[in-house]
Length: 143
Image: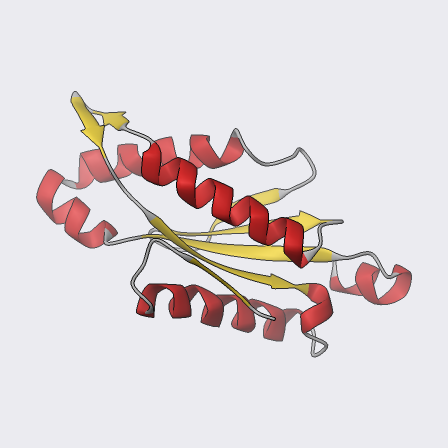
């Protein structure tokens, strides 16, 4: 993607997502429920992304969305809409209804970083952790 952007000028954005306080959720409800929440959250995201977007789980409760041909403004709008949707949703897993969770997200566009893929990922991760430090249930964007 970075090479394509450099060669053809195609834009793309990254969105890093973390489920807020997931460890506490796991400790309270158990790992079986936690696994179910991860699956339900993944379905929620997959229902909202485009076929051309790439969605991946990168760690325990961390995810990344690669959004080809997407400006940082559009990626930020998507991330905010997803955050609101997740916060409003009542998740039902393993016989437990009305489970609530929130997410934090970091957003970066390829045009904001010129040092390559590793730096792009690092900046996106910093934005995610900025969102978490600033109180969770929010989106931070690299401007």
